[in-house]
Length: 263
View (cartoon, rainbow, N blue to C red):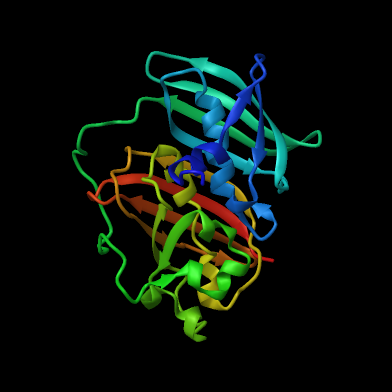
């Protein structure tokens, strides 16, 4: 049996063609319904952008132009700037001759020292017993990520679970890769791991990400990642999601903001 810690690495693996482009394969276990998960796509893109370097992603800004399908893809990467502190690469994920995700990746060295200041949400380090395990819920029918990610949802923040759809669009979750410990690239997955916050308003269905920017602030420690997901405005079909990802030691490891549209 394949060792679980290798699953995320294998699912985001890229193979260089020697000209700044890479071939890869989108795995169905890292999808929602029949579409690969957005954070998973960013992790694969960031892996390609860092290939052959000792650098890590510091920021990833992506335009989601069209949803790819599981299966083979081409990832192209070109350097826009090389500096002593920051390197910037434009990296695109393509399928069947069309660009699906167009991304700017800022590379450098992730800070290792403790932050001089941070504003960390008040949330238990570990999920409480009453938190909903998504792998045991009806959501697992389309939330394929539950096979590879252990995700727990705070029932107190998710009124829609009990039919209450007059709640603020805010959610809290805990997450970690199954059988493994989180790393910087998994932080990108965590930054986009929530179901749409508009579920709390009774707006169900597919809500594709249009644009997402993620900041990687530290390497996550072992243990659960805590996700606090907020929203500033739901305007027509458009809404935003702000996800703050905190590791088990209380460090902010990822901040992700996205613009999405409800079906």
